[in-house]
Length: 109
Image (cartoon, rainbow, N blue to C red):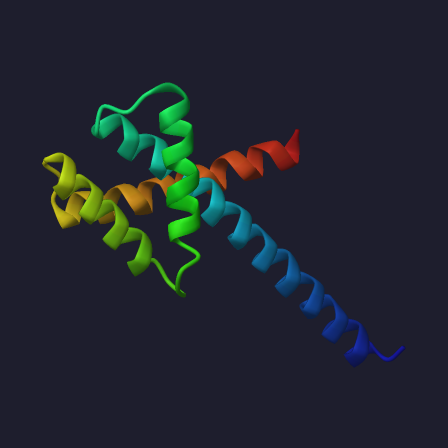
């Protein structure tokens, strides 16, 4: 194998690893976000876990995060939860960082 081919394979492996990490982190973030949203709406226990699963599924509707945001916005509005669009988006970003940290910690363990 030539040096160029080895580098190409290395880049392909890194890309695949990064995409897998991104997928796992997004799913973890969505679960954490669902649990947070459930708490904001006064949902607890098994119902909170079920709601978190709904949030994970909602993010699969279309590429990007807008489908997820719209679900949370609609659910908060229906339950009368006072969260601004900015607060929801900020929480989404914060929890992505937390999810990445959790996954990296688990990989080191």
